Image 1 (tube, one colour):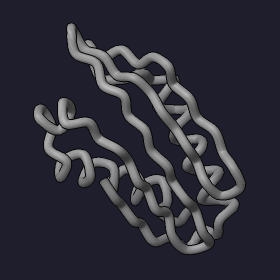
Image 2 (image 1 turned 135 degrees about the vertical axis):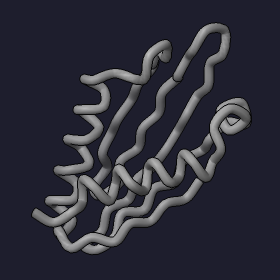
Image 3 (image 1 turned 60 degrees about the vertical axis):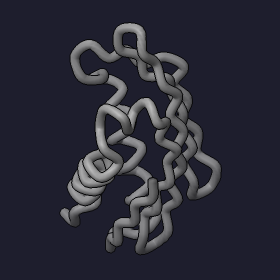
Image 4 (image 1 turned 180 degrees about the vertical axis):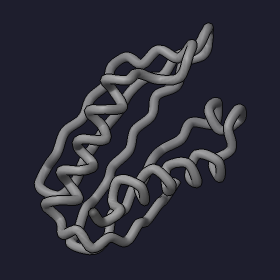
Length: 108
């Protein structure tokens, strides 16, 4: 899955906001019934790499993603397992992620 979002915050502020969003998401936890394990988040210069395992009942999926931040653009690429997209469409996931990124990168 590929998502791009333009912004006018500059790279440093965009990175700060994305990092804060990830911390907040992990603090709040996933939706009811979903358990996240093996969460890993690392920054290397302007690229965030994250991975996690999401489990619900007997089902579990590994998700890996990378977000690259420039002065004007955030690009997210994620590997979505077929088991996940069998239950939630890639279009829905992409739309939700795009909306969340737009909100955190909104100026102000």
